[in-house]
Image: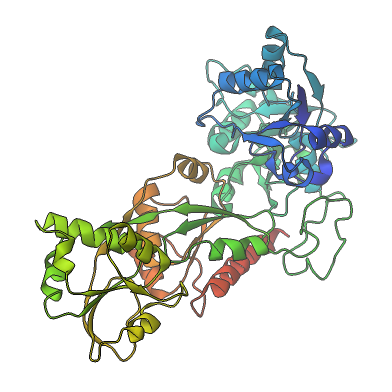
Length: 509
Ligand code: SAH
């Protein structure tokens, strides 16, 4: 088993040794912060296990330890990939210990730690001749004063050392208070670097006393590194993070960086976008966002349920010649509505059943019901119905099918309603931890169901809504909308996300 440091995010900061091991691993057990490195390097057939390590994730440290031991014992080449350096605030020691206890050999491969590299990318040297000769790297996980904390905050406040705090975003108020109480001057420079070394890097520079207020205004989110001390005001040899608009104009600006697309102009590289999906726009929006470099996280937020009211259907059937069914869900809904009304498919006797899709045809077929249908799946009712040799055909159209041109539509009967699907705990957790940068809402149903499932979104998440109706639905659900494209469509919506991200990056680029 190899305990490999992945570096802070930029794949170019993975060590040569780490890369060699990763490229030959059978099993890779990775943290979320380390995952970007993987795309580049791991074998396509490697078994990759994500163990998003955060205080609330499902896998405990014991489970991770057990997983490592189990795969190593099974004879696999196991790489445990950890953000930054495995032995700095990463619990790598515990994993090594667990392996040793189980008789599994374990070797550490140090990594470039975020504690030093992330400030460096922002131009902050953690020590500087004549300014700071000592550096304290602190975990902000436990607040100052916590009984389990081993940190002497008072002494840190009294010293002139550079202080680098990891995992400190949630404890910012307590940390600032403790340092001021210890005697740090209020005007001490402070800087926070969010998602350092990635294309999404943002930097906030302020002073200790203004840090909390400024961080709120900045919309600071984890992961971020806090630097307190005189060095935090410096800008020495910062690594240029290409502003989105300039990315194509200056290819190679980041020679040596491994970020796919960062220098090549993928405008959403490093950006994670939540794409709530209803049935209607399956996959296309996510695909477009991926083309633009984003990591699109799709989640189904609504499902279709039968309306529960058979009356409109039963009233529509007498006098109709045909019934157009959009898909298998509608077929199932008809069956269940009729059953609920104390009858069954025999109520359809004499009707020409029109399947407007292959799934509708298959569902009718399974019920032993003959139907007519179009050969092309996407050809909805029109072609199909005109093939039916009944002059003056009167049809009843179910919910989603398009009305056939030239055919008398008796009535459109809604069969299904959108209801929120199951909440996905992983999505809830990512939202809670600020791991998602933006959300695209392609319909009012998506907006409504998203909020019903996950509650109000965290402030930092950018929201792009497809059109006016969707934006109104967002507002009705208490959701702030940051962008509405001037015309509806998947491309304009994705472009709106690009613009939003660009405007958000601009002040710090
Ligand atoms: N072993 C890791 C640290 C793990 S603790 C290392 O050596 O870097 C996780 C914390 O590291 C985060 O809460 C954040 O404070 C910091 N961190 C890791 N990667 C970061 C990044 N790219 N940008 C900003 N902070 C980062």
